[in-house]
Length: 428
Image (tube, rainbow, N blue to C red; front, side):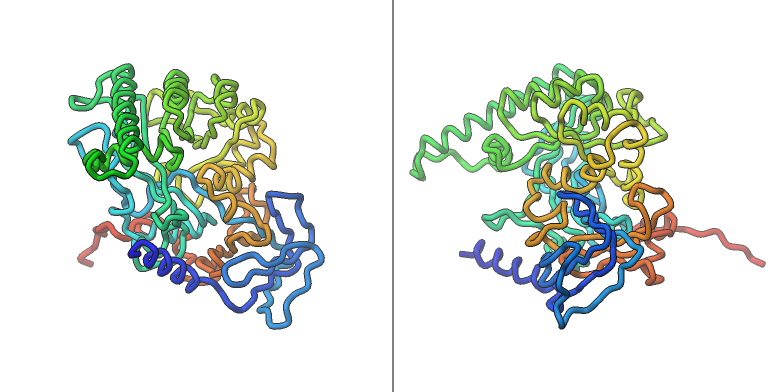
């Protein structure tokens, strides 16, 4: 009963963001992503949803009109891997901590949210870090303007906050005991934990609801059992080709849904990734560094995965890549041979599919959430600027507003307003 009430309140709260007066954007070049571009189109949103989009759209008489002539409208961007809000995960007590929830550590007052809005991102997967084999549960959010994390959450059908599980292999999670010291030991520890989760799941099934037979509740195994049941996607930080293959091996062995994150060596095993039907979310940077296993990360990964038939998306890993530069990643992939359509999908619909939110976001279609951005030029051009960002039919970023412009163009102080900044001074 309490859960149902919470869900009802969450739905009600979501409605508070929704604009009841119809909003009509006319004369724009519209990129629906799910279909061909509309050269001179109209987008109508109301109640937080898209109610009409096309070249011949009747504008409601009571609509507030926005002349978007000469501008481009496309879906809000979907970031499958971010660390905004000062998010935290597991501590140093153990390498695998599935019961840790990232949503319990996210500070929505952090300016990184406004910075992401300025970058046109409307939906994101906020994840704990990759210094563990499993650092906790991720949180799927809308970049609404909110007072608490609850205002930003996306919910599952049962009323629980939507999210996945963050896992990692390679060098990040290797350190002194109790953490693993080798790649082989890393895989062994993961395998042992999933076997325990299988046994926990089987005991629950055999109990058939009998409280006398049910095992003692275990929050760690409960979270992993959700992954085994396909209810939580495992977002797996992995770089080197052999680490990628280890992830694919584990996902097949335990039949959990996986999204490969980073995949610096993707082009070396693109066929294997596609054959496993494992989506891949890329980070493309023009200044590689930080770890030896990412040294071969190149712009060609997107094209190689597209040719192989894999689902390809992008992510910021903010603050590894600034959320305001997210579009640039798709442009770099196109420069290296990826098709323009696949690159635009990688910023939007592909990411939505990876988060299992494609029925709500990622494209401009009637019935989907009214999440979109307005640009003054081609979305893959570094000279184009995002003028407005809308989430659930509400404008959350307006470049013409001086406060928002600060987040779009400001430096370190504007982006990290939760940190203490000491400025030099002169006695003169």
